[in-house]
Image 1 (cartoon, helix red, strand yellow):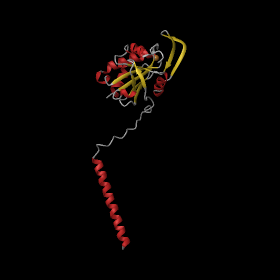
Image 2 (tube, rainbow, N blue to C red; image 1 turned 60 degrees about the vertical axis):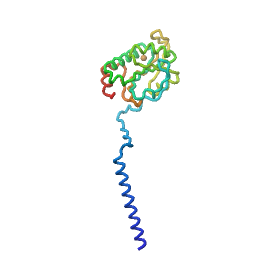
Image 3 (spheres, rainbow, N blue to C red; image 1 turned 90 degrees about the vertical axis):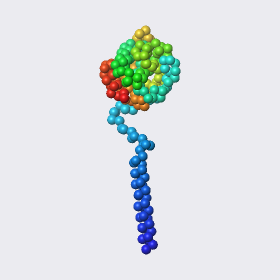
Image 4 (cartoon, helix red, strand yellow; image 1 turned 120 degrees about the vertical axis):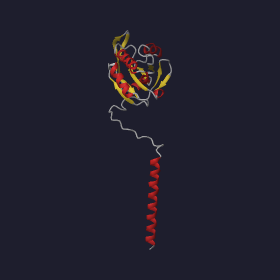
Length: 210
Ligand SMILES: [Cu+2]
């Protein structure tokens, strides 16, 4: 008899506890203000493979980090000012694409040129160079270690080739020539191979930048 009463009591507790849990869920289901949307797993196999933190000096001599560009898309290209053709071609295409998409899209994008030749590409040298391609193009340089870290994050290979003079420069730097579109959160969005047409780049920018 005593055992039965204890059993009923226990059952009552279980029922009460279940009801409380249900009510709790009910309440939680209605109050979604604190619920963060679940991260949508990316299907892009290239996602998270390019990009990362950097701390460099811009062409005005100001230290900037990747975090300073949050909220804007970044269009990132690595190269050097004495490059014979790869850089001038791609930076010109970048500028043309930005001119094509219209201000609503272009104003949300920060074009960035990161030097792989920091010993020569000082802020002053970069300042004279970037204006040739787009009025808002930011040139970035830094110590060799800082540039190496940025290039590594973007998986950009750099190889200094001595005895191959270009544009009066004593050496050539072979460098990766992908253009990276990074999102307002700094995460990789897309990339454009060397010599992608301005129309193609513009079309993609209009698709991605919202
Ligand atoms: Cu180049």
